[in-house]
Image 1 (tube, rainbow, N blue to C red):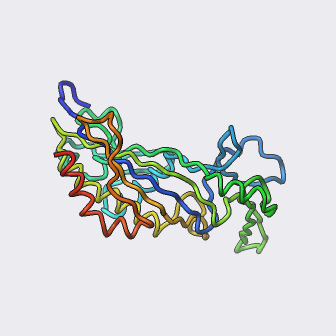
Image 2 (spheres, rainbow, N blue to C red; image 1 turned 135 degrees about the vertical axis):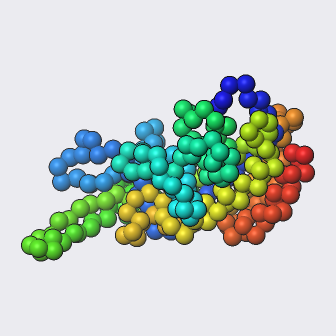
Image 3 (cartoon, rainbow, N blue to C red; image 1 turned 180 degrees about the vertical axis):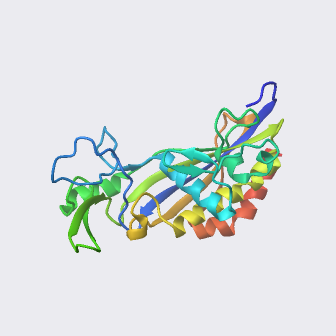
Length: 268
């Protein structure tokens, strides 16, 4: 953030929901220490409970990536083996909904605060208990899916084992924290309008996949039991205002304009 900017937090919108795995879900963990003959691709687990979970970084990164492609943004920032979009032009940045919501690298001198925080999402106790008593998982809380690739020249088979969370498992509550700012380089009205960008990203996620192996059937998810609450800047310590509850994402999409108008009335 540039020196001498004056920015005021006007409020925070909290969006909570459950994530249901419609098909098996694979979000990769470390393969270090895997025994010979073991699973090739493991899932990430909470070290305290040994339950698989969805890292907030995976959820945020996937939604951002989908929005970048949906909006046709330049892939100009190298991350690992690939590229993402990140505004590097001070004139471009104020008009870029994706960078305003999801943030840019800290070395950008023109940046304002990132609007969106995404928490890690844990497996629900109900789902964990159901998997524990089922006796049908290959490993604790997960299944092992064997895939076979065929060498097109020699016809040799190359089997691989992938660890997945079974379909029907629920993670939650997920929590998205969306901040509303006003001041130098920020406009609270624009932030409220940009909630539409975040909801579009969640729609894109439901139509795509989360985690790995998506092109081979894994990772289809559904968002459900959605609740939207608000804390207002001047009364931040008071109880959250509940703005709406929605059974599924389609209901939130239909009610988005009403929701935005509610936020405008509270934030002023």
